[in-house]
Image (cartoon, rainbow, N blue to C red; front, top):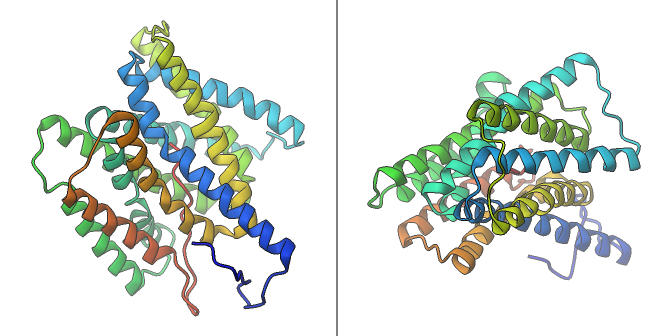
Length: 318
C-alpha cells in the first residue's frame, strides 16, 4: 500500500522526483503482476476455443523470440555469451522452463486458473528447501515456519471434494511449482551475472524449439484454432510474457528485488478476480483460506526484517 512518506532503506525521506520514480516502480510491478495473472485465464480461453497446447505455445514463443531479437538489437544487447552459459540457458529453457509452461497449461485444463495460480505460489518455499540442499543456503526458523504455513494452505486447497480430473489438475499445478523452483535454483547458481532480458530471450527461443518439436512428434502443424484462440495467443505473447517480463524487470530496477517480489504476490488475487469475471470460475471458502495461508507464507519469506536478509525468488512467467 502506498503511503505519503516513502523512505530509502537507510531511513532518509525521498525528494519529489524519487517519490515519483518509486510510484512508477510500483505501477510497473503491479502491471507485471496483472500480466502474469492473466496467463491462466488466457490459457483456459484458448483451450475453450480449440487451441491445442503445442500449436498455441510454439506460436506464442515464436512471436516472443522475434520480439526479443528486435528489442535486443534496438537496446544493443548481445545474444552472445560464453559457450557454457549459453548451453546452460538452453538446457534450463528446454528442460525446465518449457515444462513449467507445459504443466501450467495442463493444470488449467482441469482446475480453476485461480487455484492453479495459488498452488504455483508454493514455489518460494520449494526454493528455500532446494537452496538449502543444493546451494548450501541456511534454512532458518523463518523458512520452516513459512514452509509449515504454505503446507497448511496446500492442505486446505486440496481438502475439498474433487474428481479424478481435478486431482490431475492439482498434480500438474504442483509440478509447475516444482519445475519453476528448480529453474530458479539453476539460474541463481550459474547465471547470476547474465542480463535478465538476455536470459528471457534464451528462455523464449528454447520454449519455441521445445513446442515445435512437440508439434513435430504429434504431427499437428495445423494451427486450426478459431479467432478466439489466436487472440488468446497474442495476449499470451505480448501481454502475459513480453509486457510482464519487461515491466517486472524495470520495476525491480527502481524498487529493488525484495519490494518488487512482495508487490508481485498480488498476482494470484488478480487471477482469482479475473477468472470470476471472465470465466465465472469460483473457488470455495476453504480454498480461499488455503490461498491466504500460501501467500502469507510467501510474504513471511520475502519481507525483510531489520537484521535479516530476504531471499528473493523472482516472479512466475509461465
